[in-house]
Length: 436
Image (cartoon, rainbow, N blue to C red):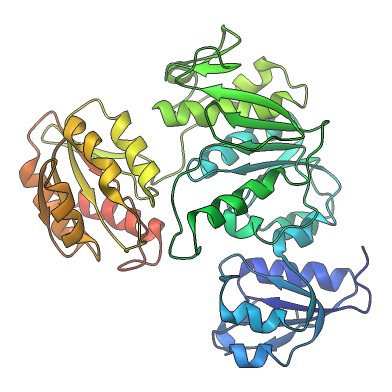
């Protein structure tokens, strides 16, 4: 497609918006960027861009453009986007814009949990094999920045959130990975079905020559792509793991504990998905195994902080939904004192109760959800509500005898008290390291 002489309006002046603006400019468009924040948000924006700080929905009603590009952090269901879209010929996201100018192969990764670890694994394998393999999209750098490089890589590991998938049109992954699905983001989506429909768009443009790598047992509609299954429950799946050894059709391929620093069934699933996806490029197992040697998962994902007085402290701040919390609990082999809580996203936490009875000695809840969670969790295990994360750590320490684990796995987002899960996890790490 050509953007020469086209009016392109971009919502959001963050890194994704800046990358989209630079790409649209390169392709000859006349570009304006709109953001509800002040002028400081436009730092680093290309000079040729028309900047509109403090933009409101009322401004959008007066904007006409052939193409509206929405940054993923902006709610496409809200009145802000609706106003700007009212006089736009087409509405897409930055990922879709970049895909229209990328000539390499895309491995797209989605799922409620595990996306970032899997994206890192795919990128690491592709890079080791000489295919470039940049991690981009929802993790890493914006896809448009990849396209703007003088020599874009032959393949990318593209993490795709539901927010990004909402606004695709032609994005076509040669391999699409579906890790899992669980309730999440109900503070943004009108229904659970709407969230699931956004996720399913990763398969929308695939054909028989493409591959869909899917966790066995996921309830998905018929797909045009060839399906490859992985599982930690069904030994008949093409890829299967008991949590340590990864096998393909019964043949051992990788020892997670010997070859990597990945631990737990959820990480076995991530590794199997990455191996299955990269194998479609004809990569030998020896190359993929070399790529994963010594790999450690990103921070905030059941990250061991320290052992003090015989008690392990694990930072699982990335657990921003119930499925991630359940995975973290299921992976523990020592009795747990759970720290959970944060922003109320409208989720039903009753599904966690059986695991609490099985795995937990006690729970400490904090943040906006502290009191309702304690009322619910008290039906399964002794629970206490506090206000801050610092109080939660102090309280949990008093409840955890030697030989146990204090697991901070919130089960919801952090935006009631923190700027994101990273700040929450970093705060937990700092506080734990200050204990004497």
